[in-house]
Image (tube, rainbow, N blue to C red; front, side):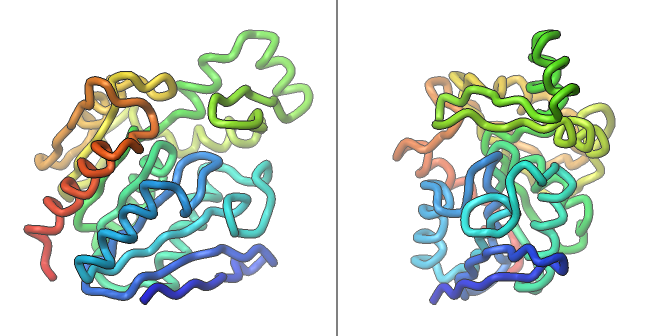
Length: 251
C-alpha cells in the first residue's frame, strides 16, 4: 500500500512524498525541472513496483507539484537537499535512484552525498550541468543582460507555459557542476537517452558515462526517442532497465 505525507523542511516549507511499501532496495524516482511525481514515468514505476512487491519513494521538490514553496526560490542545491532530506526521513537501507532530466543531476548529487546507500542509478535523459551548458551558454547576450538585470527570465517551453529562470538558479548551479572532473561513484549506472531529444543532446549521456568512475556503466540510445521517453516502448525499456539493476542487488 502507498502512503503519502508531507515533511516540514524546518522553514515552513513542506515537501510532499509518496512511499510504496515493499522489499528493498527502495527505488527512488527524482523528477525533472518543473515536473513532479505524477508524471507517466513515475506512475509506471509505481505500478511496476506494486506488482513486483518492491518499495518505491516518489517525491516533489519545493516549488514543484504538491510541495510547498515557490519555484523561483529553488536552485539545484535546494532541490538536491530536498531530495536527500526526504529520502533520509522516510526510507531505510539500500537505494536505487531513477532521475529524469534534471532529476538525473539530482540523482548523481544524491548518490555522491550517500554512496553507502546507493546501489544503482538510472538516468533518463540525464542533464547534469544543464543550467550552465544548456541554459546560460544558449542565451543571447540580451537575454543574459535581462536575466542579470531583472533576476529572472521567462524561457519558452514546448511543454506548456514559459518557465521562469532565475539568476540564482544559474549562479548556484555552478557550485554543483559535475562534468568537468571524475564523478566518484562506483555503483552500477544505466543511462537512457533519446537521439531525437531537442532539450538535452544525447551526446551528454556519453560524456557522463566517461566521467563516471564506475566500471559498470551502460548507455542505451533510443534512435527515435525524444526527451521525455514516455511512449509505451520507452516505459517498457525503463522498467526492464530497473529490473536488470535489481537482479544483482541484495534483497
